[in-house]
View 1: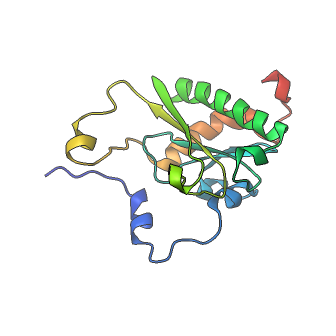
View 2: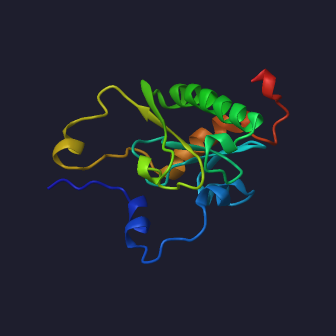
Length: 172
């Protein structure tokens, strides 16, 4: 029998009581970036690794404000989120050699939203051949990198996107 190592799943599986509150709102606040797996934060948005990813580098891109509907977003928030999605696609492609991406947004619980009250886009890197027999026959995904190592890699490549940067929105 082969053994697969995915230690980050243990916390999720063994939690008797799930944390209350919105983890995206918590990630939007300054501090605890490493623990919250925050990759970058702008004035209007926050990007973090999915704690229970479909693939290595699975990012969540969210407005900092707790908003449930696309129509709740200001023009500036919409532009910032789209800008980040575009930039992060290029950063992940270069930094992790991704061959493609799945990009998704689930609006409402009926559509599969795990956090129906706080909009967030999924950016999931894909590689040629990343789907093999394991998910089909074994219902198992193999993650080849720890969340912390992935966060550090992407964070280092995203510093210029942060709200602390002197880079202007138009120059990116």
